[in-house]
Image (cartoon, rainbow, N blue to C red):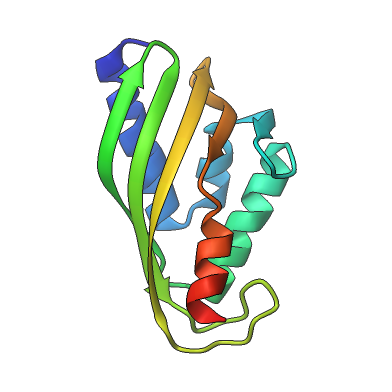
Length: 129
């Protein structure tokens, strides 16, 4: 992909995340996507995002910065929502959570093949625990 194409592609990924469209999100993931320190595969990614949305039904991501180099993206996002459901076995606290997220993705044929970055779930658990 050309850098401008990657930026448009990322805007589509962010849109799927913010619409909470798990089927659309799956289309941006390689089935065997590798994730540093997390279970591999699109199913694991989708399951974890579904858990986040169960605990934070109003969760939204905002792009702060996006850097593109060849097939790699460096992404700085701000995510937030209100804890109104169970998340990571923690009952609803009604706390508003806002986190900074930093990720590195390698994109292959328009799908995320590798991902690494901050542990968003740990930040969220710390904010509500």
